Length: 497
Image 1 (cartoon, one colour):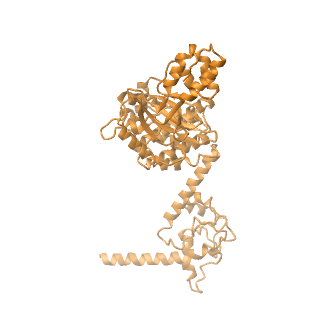
Image 2 (image 1 turned 90 degrees about the horizontal axis):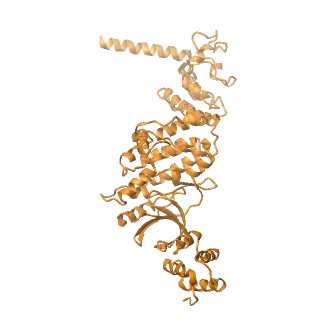
Image 3 (image 1 turned 30 degrees about the vertical axis):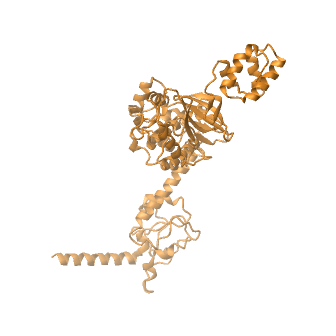
């Protein structure tokens, strides 16, 4: 116990003891050393001395000088600094007395009422979401009449502040952040969980561009479970109002209607914000923003950010559909849609051209499969395995000519060996044959008989393109087919009459 006259610092010392921030024996020793050198010191000087000794933080010293002695210790957490104030309360930087690690602790107003049993069950549910972008919801509790939530502390800058400082982001960088966020949301959606309050201020960006989603679990507390509201109506209304810039239309109509599909709309608004530098509906009162999300369309993103590829604009548009059923079926589909634009891929027209080429190649493969499905799918040369030998696919495609007797001269040998001319040989045409029945290289018209969808996909293949049915059958095969068809028609007519 300090026996020295405390002088003007007496009230400050007593507040320090009531705060339980410093061990009583250590506090008495520090105050004795300070007053011995500065017997007439004022409380601010003592506070500065304790801050310099790393006994108090500046936040704690200021609060004590204001006469606030309660609320520094909540359960195992000691509040060290204030990080910001949100709709549901203030977020503090706190250190755990259990493991010495740093945490973000959100303290809710005293008016908030909740069912702690259900809240703790929500915490256990979020333990199943293991993903680098998801900051896990760790703990809920009550201390001194105050409720608190806790997450591991993440350093960095919020996406909202980053865009406000730098302006609209490059499409590739914005798509990278959106894809990381979609991966984190998908990890939770697969567990039947959702965020509910996804917005740029709840996204933390590290210097290495690693993204972290904050406030996971708040949305689950706002939604009703088993007919019991975990948080009071005022806190719910404040949370919805603070997230209006990215709130889904269905959650605006019913604040407890928070679903995984609603996170898609919020992700679309966030991506819109990153690409344009402004929210979809930046102006107006809260009521006007609510109506805008319900019935209005935002200013076209193509006008605000003309450098964004059209395919990425389409992704944002589908995410921001008013009707939930018009959005993506799952967040996994969102990840696939963002993949061509995220990472180090360029956001220039070249990048979008690669996406077009990939889609055209897939369409060409599908068209080729549909065209050759009925004749003989087995001997058809494989489209997805390019081969440097152009003569290889010719072996299985003309079985009729290989089985022709030696006396059948109309089947020419040059037609079965397209190797000398790998550049898309023209098909055999009845209008342009030469005397020997070979293809005429001077006749360009027969090229138009090849299906356009296959021609469009051929530019991605290194192998010799497949020939149509006329080239496969040859003149003899066509004649035999015609005779067979006539016989079948005669038999059918004979049976009918």
